[in-house]
Image (cartoon, rainbow, N blue to C red; front, side, top):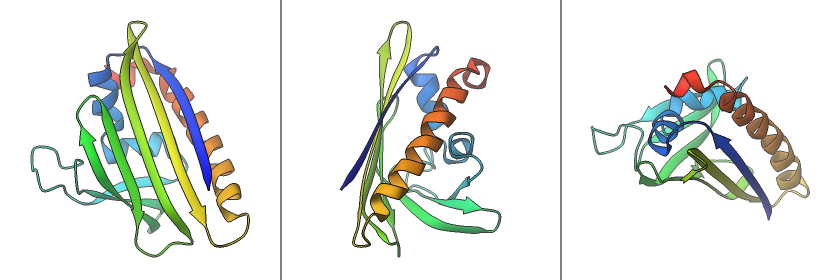
Length: 146
């Protein structure tokens, strides 16, 4: 099993960082050049990106990765898992938001595995690089979360 652990500080309150990163389409800024779109709303209409919602990730019209939100605690935590057919299995992601130094500490953890030798390692290395760079870039643009 491969594990990714990323910590990023933001100069904005947890409520604001969560409001931004908890919205599926905004994750496109983190996962660029991949795009993220909500493909199923949550049961709670007041939080369409919340518990039970599904987002699809990919490029242009092809978005083969689908993630379902399995835990959603406003301003604190989002957890998700890959659903559908994928060579990646046991994929679980969690974003935890906590107050820190007048801003927010984001702890982002992803676990994944595969029956295909080395695939989890290759995917996790690429994913970590993209996410780490995307979050760093986002943190340097505090006006996005104003």
